[in-house]
Length: 479
Image (tube, rainbow, N blue to C red; front, side, top):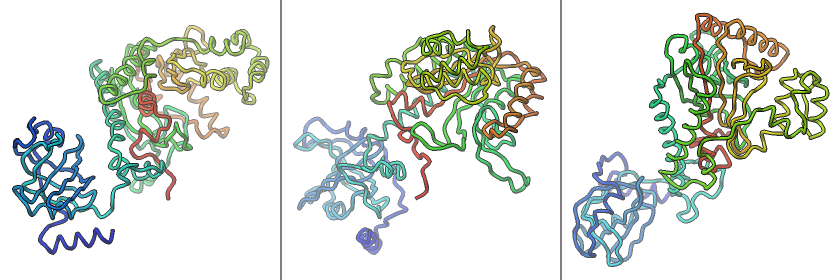
């Protein structure tokens, strides 16, 4: 760094500004390379490109450099017998990582390399720190996450995953926009965090003198919009849960939720298949994806939770519904940890989560969840269960959807039951939201709704084992 600072000072003394210079390229590096004449030695068109120097090869009366921009690499050449001999010294004196603007004629070397024959070279930004190793890039995984810019700079192919992520987000929006959904924005700061069970982050509003919470879900505000007459709405944005870190969990993550009036669970199944299929196709158009994404081609298998649990237990769990001790003992014999004094629906769900879900590999719609674990979903024909499904792939939940509960009396009872659980010490259960219940008392149309974890979808499509590999700036412990 001391040597680079010295060079910057010398450049300033010589009248070359190391920073703060304007330059407008008229071609990308890839576009310029495609304009190189086919025959070595012929002069091609004039171009202006800008990028970062990541290789320098001075050699006597000639100097070569590799200039990189977002599209790729272009070789620059300055020569003593060329149009601007003084540029040989300037180019040779620059450092790896410096950002330059280059003007000249496109040509091709005797080896066939597209090359810009320099006529002007403008230093746009002097790099005071060297880039990471030009061959190995950033090797340390934690450093890759903490200094993502170094990772992207030293290993440009790592940019592909984030370009694929961006393409996936565009594809999700295109599916929803094409289906008549309206994209909306709802509050991140909320007086009551609802729509899920998780510990929220708490912050304080000084002017109002009250605490607010960072949202843990999008659901309750989007349903208010259904009441207001916006019949198809969605939001894709950050939500926040004050939980631990793991390869599958980041405290802030991207969630997509969509709600459609006069729809139901089956409508949301079809929509989720569209969304997942579009995501895989969009990523494939940008770069390679694992062969396993072939399994993401709809239609997906459907199976009820009771059938899946029964296959593991070797007995019909519904036959034991009124004998929860026997159901719990059947689960213990297969290694399940059973919560004490839990309602039978919670017991049933615990058996599914421990014995079934981790072993579901190919996409499957798991249907018919117990009412006790589905406070916002409509009851099904069997009143013990709700019209709910989760799309499970590779042992993890990817999407969660309901036929939405629009009975305000039943909704009030269920949220009151939740509030009592909170009073008994379960701080992940949200407080009672009177304003939400009041909203649906005005009349909410029958509706279907879905929540889809965007980060997990990107992980699945790209074959990433760690959520930090698909987040540009994941949450890490402070250094």
